[in-house]
Length: 395
Image (cartoon, rainbow, N blue to C red; front, side, top):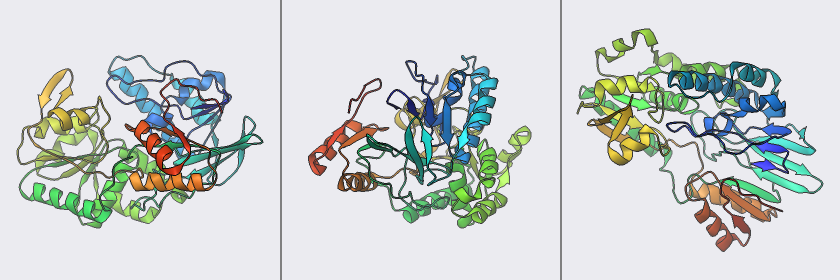
């Protein structure tokens, strides 16, 4: 989103095959990034030639640099065009202004504040205000308590609210019930002589899953970028709910040495690995070994974006690897360890904004944004819209 043609809120990519990047040129004076996931921060280094003022939490800055380098590595390996060069990444890491929660700063004439969004460590909702009015952008937000993080902060009311809509129309299962089913499935798989492959996003999900496994006494292997992300989280303990419990979870797990990955398959076990949507990463190595094993199981741990292998196996029962289409014969399960608010959480957040005097709600980031906007208009007596990419909204 670009506000007043000057402030850019997030600038990400879609991790499909091939990756999808923003269309149309933007030339912002300021950039505010909500959090360190590819779909929100993945292309910010591409803007460095314009030398905008860039703001985000210190965790998001470190995650953004890590993701940018990984994006370049993957693009080179697949012969794709690089979205930026290493000098851009270094400029991004060096010139980003890091801001803590609840600390005001100026961006292009707006007084801005970041609030804890409860989504991943360092994730923020963004509040902008000037003499003409105010705007709040939720970013990705979670109002529930998890092992890794506490719930999102209550946001100040604004004239305009830009609200994520990922789980509109869907309620999450009770967390303890979900964890119990997940743990029981892993135990049964390993006890029966199979491997439990647990694809997990490197940022937030790998750490949450390892904390769950440690809590229930299940030792596992951990592979992929989630190990590097853990090191970043350790450098910012103030952004974690309980740093000691996170340390305990990683000490309880066995770290995979990429050069000796085959040893992990010596005997049945649980393996937590990237990529969370099965689009590359060590997960593809493990799939080669268990894709036709009826005793083994793949346990997906989050939303699978359209165009990814994870979505493909859910809908069609096969995945692609180096141009080959491979049927997945082993068991497949999906556990919704989402880091987003569900239907009731989203509606409560919008109600709070409307009760505080919000005049316009803009629904973004979801498969049913137009449905959410219609519900808001019908039930909360406030104007709500669902813009398409490229739409301009005049206030």
